[in-house]
Length: 392
Image (cartoon, rainbow, N blue to C red; front, side):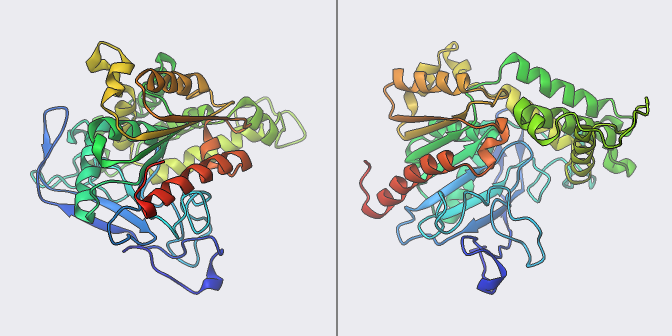
């Protein structure tokens, strides 16, 4: 598969090591929820570990808004940082690659190798740009199901994701209820609050009003709406952190010892946010950001059931683990507990952990002893089931 090895001395003992992404191309049309379709499309994928003989040990990783396929390991011996969820994927880690075959992909519509707005439209010979069709969480899950077919995986041992990834996990449990045994939903929700939709709209407006946006055709103009992307990332990043974590990291520290009464960078937190914005604007596509935040806004599985989430969850057949974090105000514990209550009312098997953490929404990415213990214990049970074939 796509996991390869280098010298054991090159990487930490609990790392999956050197990994190589792989493109999966599909020539069958993919019908989209919005009524359009993609005739030819591709997904960028990484895999870790080995698929067992009956394909019962496969775990799918669903990424968040700005995530991608590179979830663990390193692309070269010179990489300074591993994949975005390396703390939780690898030998002996909660998602143990000694026991699981792990699949991580860049979502359709993304900008890290999967077909998206920056890809070339075969009909025009130009980048899709704003002509790329609107996608929903259901569309992502449909494309992932076709990827599973290609890999020979009839049923996932678990589908796992945080934030927007958790929404995909929930959609998997409802759209393909027989194709997963466990759903692990971390720092997520069954629908966005009006406040969250508001944050997303501010970010979108920052991008759309950038003079270099060109109604989404900035690639054809040879430019990037950097200022808009920068502002969108700065706004978003603030919501991913907690007041405590920002205070601990930056406080009110000034970069210089005197006041300059200007509008340049004075406080350390300003420098940090500008750095995050600058880095993001060079690595993420603006149209992809618009597309993915809209998918976030639209997600609401209860909408087809007159707002009754309990009825919507009736389709699910898998077991659930739901995890929240105390200082996450973007997707607060209250949202997770609403989902847990609805799962319980729908008579589904669900475990819930509310983790005390100072790190806000980003806590699901950060090493934490209690979180790791809960996550590991649950995934060990999933791995045992893959061996015995018995669901506990």
